[in-house]
Image (cartoon, rainbow over all chains, first blue to last red; front, side, top):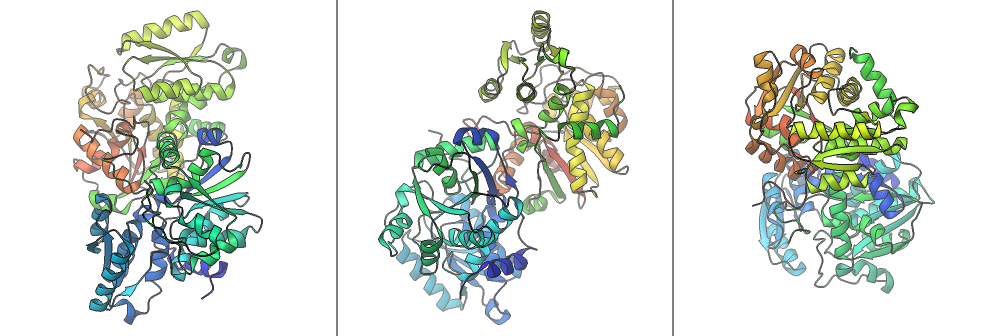
Length: 315
Length: 315
């Protein structure tokens, strides 16, 4: 299935009744600090605190009734899990969620709060996949992959669609990249709506598999990533990699130190709770590794699920 | 000077170019928790992180050029100080700010960052007033009182004006009350736009001078208030008291424990950084001291200036 702006528009119509149309915020002191005009698409204010709800909703409500009856299942380090649990609850079907043992307590509690049925596993991809396979065999649930799924990619693209409806004359758009679902959807929507826009991605330097994949020309798996951005630990997928290779100009890697500095600044000055993964686009501006001075830059603040007992700038 | 909806509308036109039109947010899990439909007017996302910028802007830009040339001056525990400093900078005039010595470090830094000229004093009203009088005598600056000023009250009322433009069919509106500027402006705007709306106020139990003032029928000064809500320590003023007595149905007092519980919930679930003072309206719903079940309730989240190194739910 080829994903186009029409697929994204169809997803937008499909999920409209369930998602928040999130605001686009500006912050003068941030603009002064980074030397660009930054337009923040606040997906941290989306339901379940992340853009992931868009893709999960589109996937869940696309299922035929007979298929849906067996429920849905996935493995996820956090935000996709919450998103799928809530989308399934809205449709009245079970959601089986495989989570790594080291997922933050606040994320596990949130999944359970949305009615998700959690199975914990070792925090490596092989364990996630085998655990998920067992659950699917036992229940007949439909797997909704966190990013390597056309319905999910199209749903994620609706955030950029809304951003460009609100601010049509952006020069650049930057999204975080983990598995590439958000980035793929963003690129498809942005390039179709504003052909001259530059689409960039931001990735933690300690989990730079997407950066290395583009350099190598094939998917380089994420091995033992080390970063505070716990939503961006996964590898690109077979669906997302070709879209990114074709439509994304550059992947900028950012340090955890820049993520934390920028995060505290945005909390303090913009009053927005953004999680480390969601701060990577602003961290890219913060470190000045790319020259976007004077430009109008859209950034997707992808999520806001943070353990408030343990903030990264506190000793 | 009588303050009417026309005064508030004039203020709205006056300050439009300078203020953010802040979003109105909803949060399903909050609604479930409190049993009402809550519409949050996010003045924590206002410039300088508080509604105070509305009133300060209206006051500063109302000054005649000859008067403005000498600058403006005020005493404030925080948010009004930042607001006046930024408004003055936008007009290109000096702002002399008297702050109590115990004002949070982050608030002092923010005032300085906006170019405000800070004089610290003892944290009692008499010291604030005498220090301010000395500065005015030396500079000829125009005093802009944090709340007992018609221009300020009219400016603060623009938040409720916008809220009711976005959500016209509210049953109730709740604002925090400290000196009463926000509450007065809110009541004037709300009662004019929606005559059947109930206007309530929320006040910390440890600083319940407004509650006691309404009961006594005259202004009861705030003496040694003890609350985490550091923006609500002041007494009502001669201008604000009569408006509140006439138009506000009830003042609900809330515990610091409810403020902190509700604050953590809103940070965690709505991803909004709200300061303790700004949480008092939701704390009133949280404690269930008033029965607003099933109603459509607008709340003014008045500010978001918090010291992120020291959060109240952390040991």
